[in-house]
Length: 484
Image 1 (cartoon, helix red, strand yellow):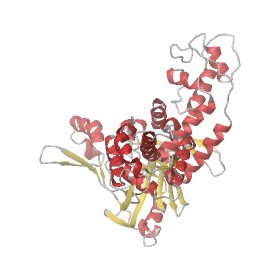
Image 2 (cartoon, rainbow, N blue to C red):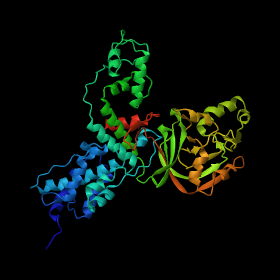
Image 3 (cartoon, helix red, strand yellow):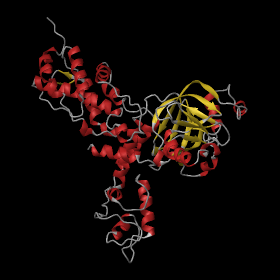
Image 4 (cartoon, rainbow, N blue to C red):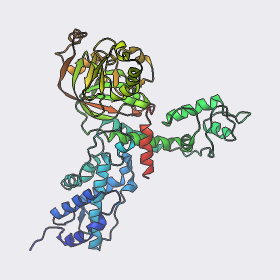
């Protein structure tokens, strides 16, 4: 009787699978799916051939060993050791390799950090593969290692960061740093024996007195901005820790944290899509990989931050009314109405009283309307969208974080030209201004991605950094570091 290859390992795989799957980060669901995959295969090995790894197994182990190339941590995927003469050892190694491959695939898609635990405003829809999906794709692949690597983001922005990571690691800075002792926070005017050390670390010359002066605070603020910290010029605990980290190591951490945020995006951004980079205050329309329109944007203030997520834009509204959101109604209008019943009316708002005793406040269309003449809709749980604004002078500011969370767009009718198609020309839209509210559906829904890219590598390999407006970059970096 000719038995299928690998049948001799079936009993050992069944007996040792539970031990092989005892990995801290492997959830019960993934363990059950891996067991089911082996049972469906008659508990035959997937990666063992003869007395060692098959060609597919070797490709997988090679990819796991090079996890660092994609900013992942190779020590998260410790390759199983085995004794070639011990069937039980080989069987356990086979199942363990499957488990490590599943972990890698899910990490490559963004499983290392749960963005929603960092902030309620980080709500990307992660596309985490199941263990069943991973093993079925790997087992039937001509090159299992290449298939596993392909779980990492395919986007050009990610690939450039990956190349930058290689460059940073090739130029490691081994220069000893000045060690600054811990102590109370230092502000301008304070005397402290650590001031000469701080100045030396920042490349400043010595002073006669150990006073934390304005020049020291200015240099420290520049360092903080580069490190993604609040640029307040105050030497606190976080800044002290950053000063003690070599620049290249900090640069690696920053690039890896930015690479992690690329994992939050869909693998397919859409051949045509809109990208809003919040820290850059920019909106771009991309068609077939090319930027066809780019404009300035105003985003949320730190206390009313713009959320980060992907969605589909499906319509625009010309001459929109603005329905005052509950937060503004509670903080501004209710106190005003309590003091003066005509508070809203005097400012051009319409108050509607509901049957339950509550009220809603609406600002009718008009040139003073908070939304301007047009808004771009992608209905979402955060109730944010892109829109015009009557306060266009703010676009001249360099740091444009002024809104309650929505994204205000400069020259919005030029954006409308891009999303509505040739039927709705610029002139035709302009003729609607001042008439009643009008909904216009897009010819087809257009993917829109609100992203938080503080570190961007250009086509020439240069790295540009933007202010960590809301601290999201720092949160991701710290979450990754805390896992080590």
